[in-house]
Amino acid sequence: MDVKILNIEVATNPSTWCEIDLKALAHNFEHLQKLAAKNMSHASGLMPVIKAEAYGHGMLQVAECLHEAGCKYWGVSNVSEGVNLRAAGFKQKILLFESTIVSEAKGIIEYSLTPTVCTLDMAHALDHEARQAGIQIPVHIKIDTGMGRLGVNEEDAPDFVQTLREKCPNLILEGIYTHFPVADTDRDFTINQMRRFRDIVYSLENQFITFSFVHASNSMGLGDYKSELFNLARPGIMLYGIYPQEELKKKISLKPVMSVKTRIIFVQTIAKGRGISYGHTFKAKEDLTVAVLPIGYSNGYLRSLSNKAFVLVGGLRCPVVGRVTMDQIIVDITAVTLSGRIPKIGDEAVIMGTQKGASISVDEIAHWADTISYEILCALGHHLPRVYH
Image (cartoon, rainbow, N blue to C red; front, side, top):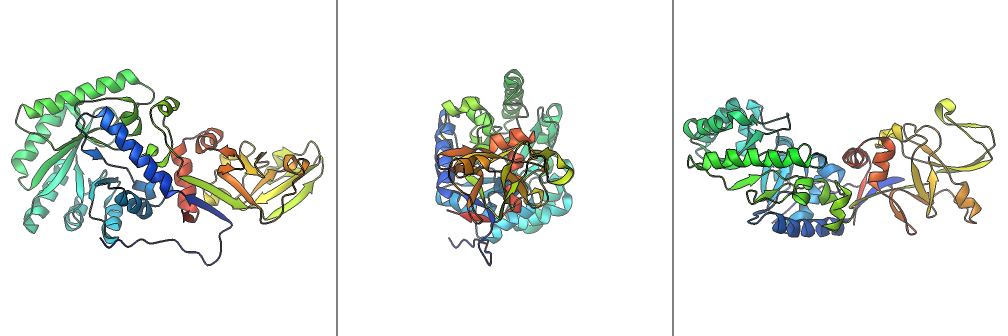
């Protein structure tokens, strides 16, 4: 297979960058496959979610790594993402989670993408385009059993599927799925949700409507819920080495895929009583040595991290002092200088990852920013150049 990967190139070494560990990604995929085999008795495999530039890790590079690991299915958000994968030469099955706009039906057919169907208008548009092309196309039907986002209302599901079977002969009803909104916080609701979805699938089977793929499990669903019904899983965040719940560390060994590094661009002494950064939200209580790092909210490092976060310099945790600015932060490195090490311009600092045995995780950064790890990965991965190992 001739896969065209669009590697990111820069004229000079970047001062701030994301490092993506593809070996860690392959490790996670392998261990998720083993987990799926335990929790789904007749698993067809995994459908890794690589939407949104693979959560900031780079969709095409992640796809290539997964292809080499034997992955046969991917989940993405929209037609544009699917087309990018096809343009790069990938032949895997690509499920579109968002496919409700009728004008996109022709592109879905042209690029052999698998749409999610949850409206009759889209179903008819796809059926028409497939008939025009002289083919039948596989579709997956999404049922809303509690997410309150996209999907056929569960009460309407049997009639909706029956209508597709009768009125859309050019659609192959290949898959049916739902989504877990509270798998990490409400076990009773999730189990009840699984039962209701199971009842829908069984009622359709009684009408001789069966599906090759029945799926619901996101990362948390795959990690903590067993099912005889599901034969495909859609892991997202765990693929990238992040646990949606601490308890899952007992069940699966994952490795973080992304780290973020930068270089010191300035060092100075701040006298006692002086303010730092905009608004002087931090004032030195004693003489400090500070370093300036070239990362800020324009690079995806959230302003809400002001006066809360830490970075690694010389293997020590150093606090971010003052407000995060558009493209710089200021870090108190006094502890490093007191240890006998004198940081200088050009030295490496770690925003997220490991240095000299110390580490800062994406979960910690998310906690400091009062958000979730998904947002941190997407923000940093989308805004910074990526280097692959």
